[in-house]
Length: 418
Image 1 (tube, one colour):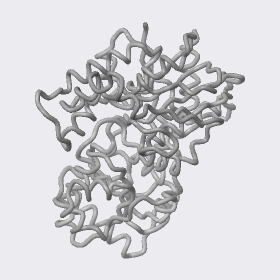
Image 2 (tube, helix red, strand yellow; image 1 turned 90 degrees about the vertical axis):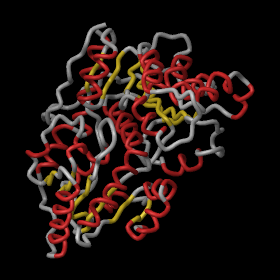
Image 3 (cartoon, one colour; image 1 turned 30 degrees about the vertical axis):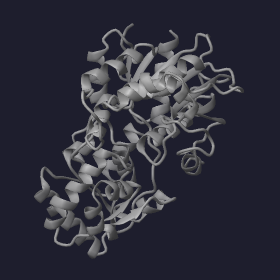
Image 4 (spheres, helix red, strand yellow; image 1 turned 180 degrees about the horizontal axis):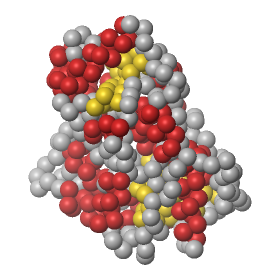
């Protein structure tokens, strides 16, 4: 199959959005995750397909053994995802009954050696299809490990499948394995990547949400059909306060980045303040209780209205030293328009030189980050608030706005149906 060049992402003109999916039903299949960048991407996908005229189904698949709505992580997921925006929602997962099958042998035995790639595939093979599922005309699925479930979702029909990769997952598993306990012989990156690529070949189109990911997957799967489509990220309120903030979800890369800030940067920051929002507090407390206790006053936990947090911001810190793929929290920070103190890695995959953005202070090391952080604190102490417009806000509007994303999807759909 051929390649698709990057869809245009310029600021939308006055012309109305096309409605190529009018009368069609699109299933957005996604992991049952919340309070993270992937969840925000899924919400934006649903909104974009609705804007293109489709009836949209959200099909949430749990990546563990637990029956909805009361088992395992389902209550927390349901409580946190009222804003999905789909016309209809489905909740799917394998249950503990799957342990009576070959799951222990095919999946768990490999998991204890670190093979998270195969474990998730084996779970997805055992997720039941909803009995009352509507007829589907297009499937937009997220992450390779949903594909065994998606194949059965098609019910033998020829339904086009767009796979949104959201990074090379084998990279994430290697990072995650650093904080876990596994037994030798260890399954490494190459073995997990092979599992991922094998399933990706079954999609009609592989959509990638940043430049690094797009480049890597084109090289790894030269015969597949690819498209670079930057994700839409729902804008947050414009910053107009004086608080210095960090917003972060609980994953290993965020933990490593925050640990660097607290251990290496904070002692050099001269008492500059910060408020840390999101469920990263639980991750720090679990992985390094002493570090959490030393800085527990900074952690504010998950809040229901993250928009109010951004509205009160005078500066956002992005102390990113670990991680792959596009950072959705970094895009949110762009949209609020506040001054940013950031490392270069925070802008990975965005196709922009952050040094050209006038309200970004780019730090190459801990000392420089601390210097910019102190300057932000001085601005806050003097009562300075962010201006109404900024380079980062304009960049967000041109590249990551929901309308730009919908137009990019419409362009890809034209090539998919050709």
